[in-house]
Length: 247
Image 1 (cartoon, rainbow, N blue to C red):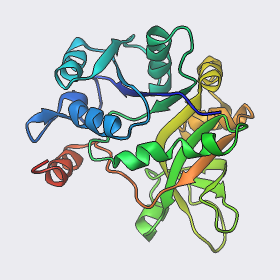
Image 2 (image 1 turned 90 degrees about the vertical axis):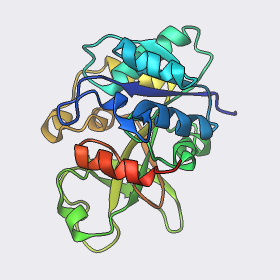
Image 3 (image 1 turned 30 degrees about the horizontal axis):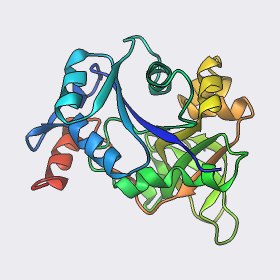
Image 4 (image 1 turned 180 degrees about the vertical axis):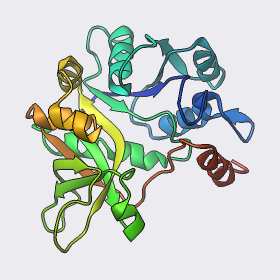
């Protein structure tokens, strides 16, 4: 059965390392406008901004997008996405929700589209995400880089995600994978996920996706070549401006 996705971009105004991040100017436009443009170009479904401040909603509308105002006190982007989708589509017409972080202004639209592949490949997959190869020792050893242990069969580009960690995993020779925090949830899986209490390992590793694994939810990952630039600091913002100069 064909999927019917909706793409949601969660955006909150307060950020510890880069205040008012969604409104940060990148070559004459706010960051949220660039993310919206990339999400629409993915052609994965209608795009919705889930935000906690009217300034973000207005920036989205000026960019030709649709916005839903959500509570300010959500503990995670997934909770914000869930509230927005339930408000926008209470009858459940969209059966898949793609969560695209609002700090990915240079993401390749094909990467967004790619996150649907695990759900298209197997109806038993509840949540899909993306991984890219770890290419340097610094990346391998950096606790800020989340690593994914994924069971890829020989020649396969989709595999079961077995664990995520800030530590260097798995042990032994072979490739390691950098987790990209972009998700596609089956609608019922998202509803279940946000209803769960934070997991033991989730709280220890500070990784939300471990809540799903602890609850026995199947999470598959699709392989992509590179990690998109996430903007969390002023230095990242400068890099994004350089990457998008002239666009």
